[in-house]
Amino acid sequence: MTLQQWGFSFKGRIGRREFWIGIGVCLALMLVIFTIQGMGYLPMHYAVFAVGLVMYPAAAIMAKRLHDRNKRGGWSLLLLLAWLLIAVDWGGMEPFWQWGIGRFIPTLIIVMMVLDCGVFRGTDGPNRFGKVAEKVDFVSAKAD
Image 1: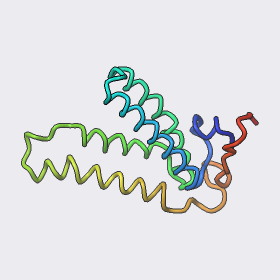
Image 2: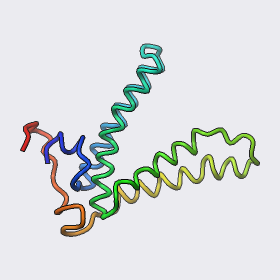
Image 3: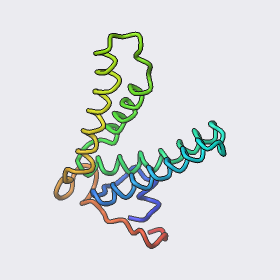
Image 4: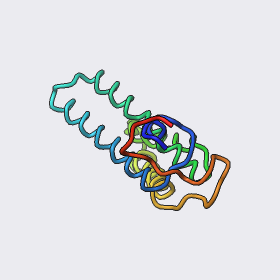
């Protein structure tokens, strides 16, 4: 699998190593974006646009890893749900529900997705999403 397929295609399967490398790169880029924006060098609307650009490869990498686990890439939308639950102000509710909806459920979703994608092995042999997980050629940038 080429670097372009790894970062921008939603087809195929990747292993745990390729998943962690991709997620690590995306998180590092987001950290840089938030740091630069926090220092006042990057207007908020540019930061939001840049994060959106980083989220596309993150979604592609997540979808391919879910494919290796024989699951649809749409399961990655659970992470969007977790983020939305964290972002909403639950201040009008009782403290137990504030904690439950605003902290516990998102944390549970994130832990489940990390275990599913980053720890558990993929399916052995071919599945409905393709052949065995492919290795990514991180050195060569040529197309197939």
